[in-house]
Length: 184
Image 1 (cartoon, rainbow, N blue to C red):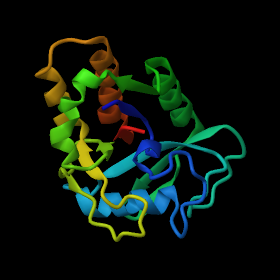
Image 2: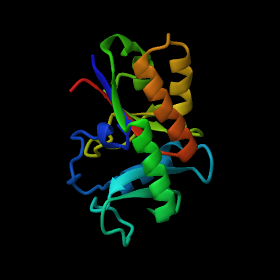
Image 3: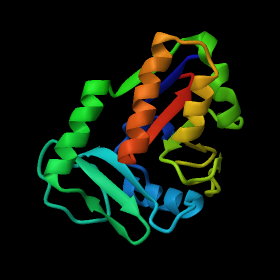
Image 4: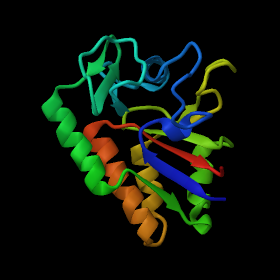
């Protein structure tokens, strides 16, 4: 039971890195996540996206990556200076990793029988997606990074956990979305 994790929402999608999500795009999907899980009025998510990924909000980013904000009534790419700083932090930490099979049980509880997960900044509720079956996030578990940090603290030290811990810290500090999936 290999578990892959990384910065962004790609591992929570049925087909990671797919550009065509039907009638959805990453912005509208994350807006529905904010609507479902937020425990505070100004809850927001940030995700690193390639400049050419389809989104609703018009933008003038014409190359590379952008740091995209989604919140209640707000959205769009953040200022280039902020984006560069956060992208550099993600790159320095290493954007993705895989947990050894023996550490899989750390994820089983939060996944709630799902095989895909969005790991979100604090101030949200752990739950399964309540979307309809045509939504790419149907059946995805939504889990606060703070809950994942608590679980990691209960497990013996391991190199893979240290890396995941760094990404969880980045998620909480910069309000970045992380994702994970079991198998595949």
